[in-house]
Image (cartoon, rainbow, N blue to C red; front, side):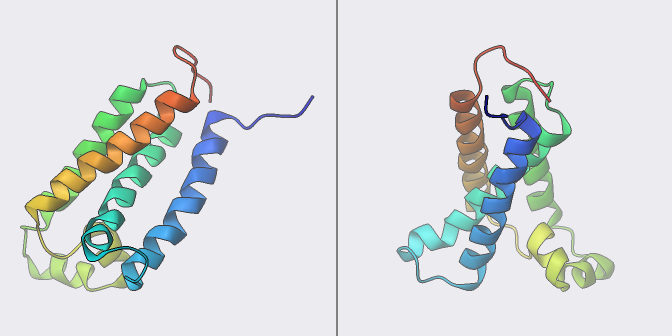
Length: 134
């Protein structure tokens, strides 16, 4: 019998695929039409957050984990309105810029919703209803 990955291991594998794709899209914009390139990175960013919260809270429902991910993405986006010098300096670093972003955009909120919905949908399809494992 073949060993199966736990839920956390599966989420980790998904993250391992999402991060390089997101970074590629961040620095290269020749894969898709401009409108897709503009928002696909934000969609993947939110999907990544869903999977990170799924690793952190595997016993919580998919809907609750989706709520955590969406709230985190929205808070980070709203923090872009905070322009303190130390926050701007943090955003000027490579990791700070990738995680915290640089400029508030209303359209990012929709992209985050779509990304969390993508993670949620993947989770619902992949996991059997009521099945909780770590």
